[in-house]
Amino acid sequence: MKKWEHKSLDEILKKTETVNPLQNPESEFEYIDVSSISNTTFQIEETQRLKGKDAPSRARKLIQTNDVLFATIRPTLRRIAIVPDHLDQQVCSTGYFVLRPKPELNHRFLFYYLQDGDFMEQMEMLQKGASYPAVTDAEVRMQTIPLPPLPEQRRIVAILDEAFAAIDTAKANTQQNLKNTRALFDSHLQSVFSTLGIGWIEDRLASLTTKIGSGATPLGGENAYKSEGISLIRSLNVHDLDFRYERLAFIDDTQAEKLSIVVVHPLDVLLNITGASVARCCVVPEDVLPARVNQHVSIIRAIPEMIDPEFLHFMLISKPYKDKLLQTGEDGGSTRQAITKAQIQEFKVAFPKSVTEQRSIVARLKVIMTETRRLESIYQQKLDALEALKKSLLHDAFRGKLTNHNKQLTTVS
Image (cartoon, rainbow, N blue to C red; front, top):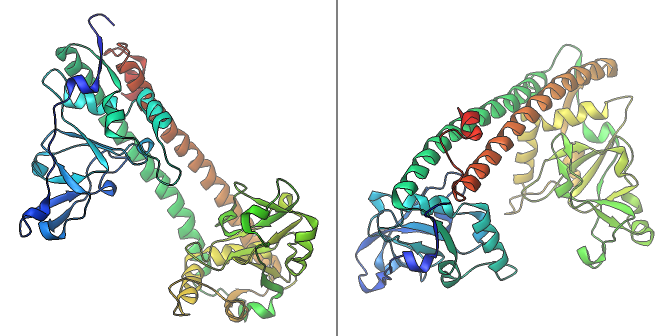
């Protein structure tokens, strides 16, 4: 890297100012909180219009156009943004380090450097605190930056601006395709379960099941969990169409015996019955067994001669029934959503009287679901590749390897 230097940020940053809005109680200003910056768009997406008398204690840093804001709370979340013209002379939280470049440092070159993997690794090593890991302004100031002459900085910024704009467009298109794919399956589910077909009947779940019930958490909570043993299924494992194995808990035989009334059987339908994940639903996979459920998950064990368990599962995640379940969860009047055993028992569902027809519907839905997941996988791989491309371009940019002829730039094109 001919003519490149390595300088500490402290050497090439101007001093910034603090302000106390309380001293001007009636003056209004725009406030940028730590949550105001998006770590996907790298922009200040929302601000609060406040009077000085209403300013929070953290509203103390004065900002200018082209300052670069870097959140020092949970720094690896990469909440980084450039201050736009309309927020000149406004106020940000002390949770940001305000970087104001001297003339020898291009503000967008600095903005991109703060996103680079090496800088992020340094932040990860320096951050302290379990609940709210953070770095100090002084620690950020002491970081070094590879610094080429200003014309080279501008050239690199121009290349990155163009490449990142193309990548962002490609990501937006791919995300829309992913959204459309999921919506197509949801739409098909809705069309199946929104009206009663010929030969369909309606009944309460209590009449269609041999078991409805939830369990409990062993005494001692998470500290009582084992590294292996009998699975304890929690609400975080239960997702629509999907059982997630991450953070699956285990209990020993003694603990499991105390939960003997909630032994999970093959093809049991699992329904989340409390909290933010209420009404999420899946069929238990056999490789999780033997298993129990805790108090946040209910077993619904269908009578297969009356209603196919997989048909019931598809029904409960369809929009018409999902909406009914969510409404049921809110009807209790509690601030915490919850569905009781009695409510599940009285929950009415419509289905073909013929189990053969139910299974035929399940087979068609599985074909569509398989194709949906194949397309989702393709689009997700593309999104991952585009994100990796961004990281690769940043890596090359700060090592003097970024040219207009980079293979990566050809890929973007």
